[in-house]
Image (cartoon, rainbow, N blue to C red; front, side, top):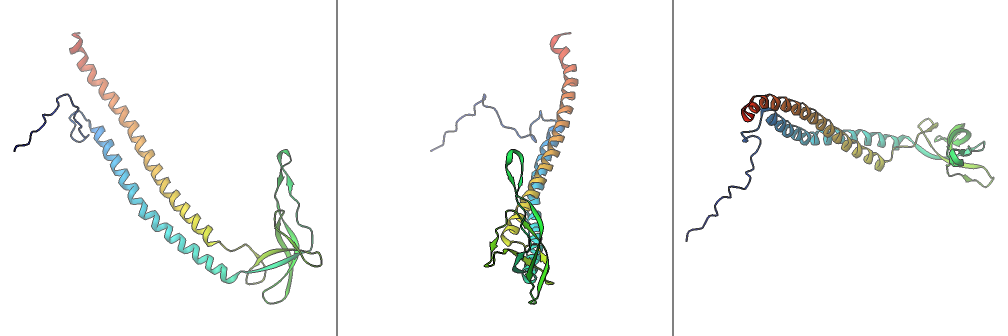
Length: 206
């Protein structure tokens, strides 16, 4: 049994791509080609950014491992009072940091004296004799050092950096395409005016 074919609706609009549309101009095809090229470039940038993020994570993890091996956590006893919170706008307390005289046991067993940076929001414990103690990190020489990198926080920062870099590349490509589109619009407007100047007298009979 033959299958009946529904005749094509002559009033139904035909969807023509810019490549086959006889009314499309060179600027239209250039704009479409640029959009495709930039989309491909953005897609290709993803593995590049991912590779860069992986290399960055390897460096960060190496630093974190070295810090974990060389830094030592201990407790320093303050020889002076910690800083008090400042007062900001509308009387809102503002946390501040300041160096405070203190002493602490070094990794070699000796007692070192110096200053440690203490924040007004630092949790401090009082020893039995009433002295204020704060946790500090020491380097291999027994001097105060910055806390080691937190692997979880470092991984989060690496991911955010990689995603941010990929988004920035996408924004750059989008800006380039919009610039090309604005120039194409101006080119089309000029071409339409020139063609209309030729056709309009034929329609109006002037």
